[in-house]
Amino acid sequence: MDARPKINAQLNKAKGAGFENAAFYKNIRIEFLNIHNIHVMKKSRQALAKIIHTPKHKDKDWLAQLGNTEWLSHVRSLLKGTLRIVNVIHHQRCSVLCHCSDGWDRTSQLCCLAQLCLDPYFRTTKGFIVLIEKDWLSFGHQFDKRIGHRTHDNTSDSERSPIFEQFIDCVWQLTQQFPSHFEFSQHFLITLLNHVYSCRFGTFLGDSAKQRDDLKLSKFTLSLWTFLQNCHASESFVNVFYDSHGTRNDILFPKYHSKIIRFWNNYYLMHCPEHIMNAKPEFLDTNIYEQKFLQLQKELQRIKRKYRAKSDAPVVEVDID
Image 1 (tube, one colour):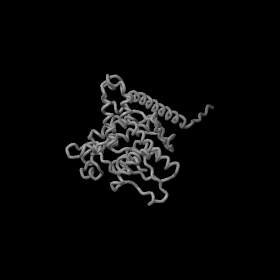
Image 2 (cartoon, helix red, strand yellow):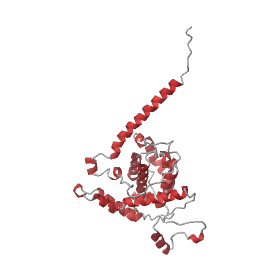
Image 3 (spheres, one colour):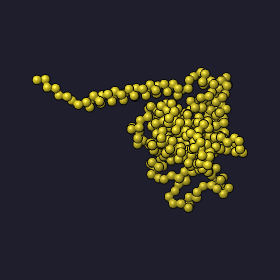
Image 4 (tube, one colour):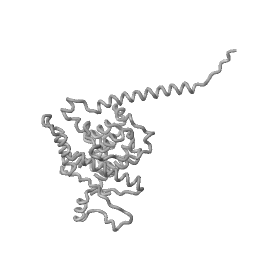
């Protein structure tokens, strides 16, 4: 699976790079997933940021402007590519080699999304953390360059691109399509993204594992994962509708049609004044219901334990003669 548009791969071939020659391999098929590069994604995200802060009196055609950013179209392309990989692995029982130009942007996105769909372990909170460590941090995604942490050196602004943010958006899309299949909540994803940009933790600093080792970040900074699993809000990071038993063996086949793809308003609009002033973010409302649901679950467990204790109590025979 080549993540690029075919025309882009052919142009790279003219420069001495390109893609595999199928004549050199047996039993292979090369497919292009038509996902654009970091520069296109950056331009799309900048357009999205611009319309998010559109003054209230100028947002009459806001939905049309949202469509013009093509952000949701790019999310759609990633989910479509993910579905293709899942189908080939699950239905055709074939191995898949996935790559893009360099192998640390679109490749990480697609491989992670496919693994989320294929393996329920990665849909747990612990498994999701392992997945990010494995296919983003250890694999070499250049967080400093893509996020723009290093503003003091000569790093070109053209290297910035919201690749990881776009991946988390796709994960959120999956949680909306399959609400009982993920252990972590929307609040977990939003908090994770906020701290990717905050630089409060050392987890996402540097462009490689070697850089993080050289800087001794594990010694001098706190891990974001430790914080997420131990902070006072950790209970709100759990999806109360998660069904660990009923979905244990499920394979997810993501829907990618434009009618299905949603705009993640709770994340993208959380700092928009009109959104904050005129309506509470949706996830704050749902958190209230989720907490009530969680309380009911705890009460149900307490009643079950009480019932079992009574049923397990020894029967005492009393001689009334």
